[in-house]
Image (tube, rainbow, N blue to C red; front, side, top):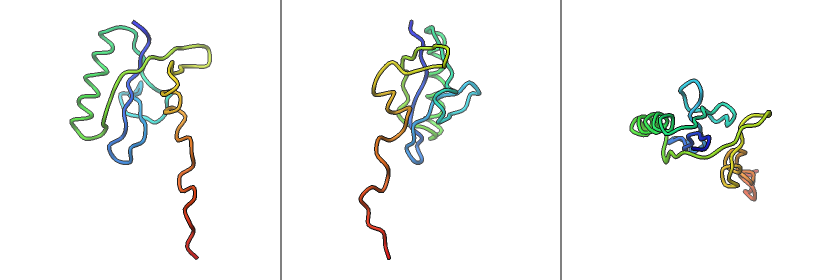
Length: 98
């Protein structure tokens, strides 16, 4: 099984989050807890189900990552974009009052 982490979105605000090494949801990709077997994946899925039931997150799923000397990195382009944040600035084109 490949190295994996758990991702989701915060229910309030919608930001991308990861299940962290300290058993809390964080927006810091590098702080995500990694697992490499089905038992570890089951633990992450169980934690995600509890957090979703408690209305902390929505849409949790596992993603494949790789580890090198610089840390962990997502294997898919989509997850790379999600990890880096929005590709456009919020409020672009909005008129300022005044």
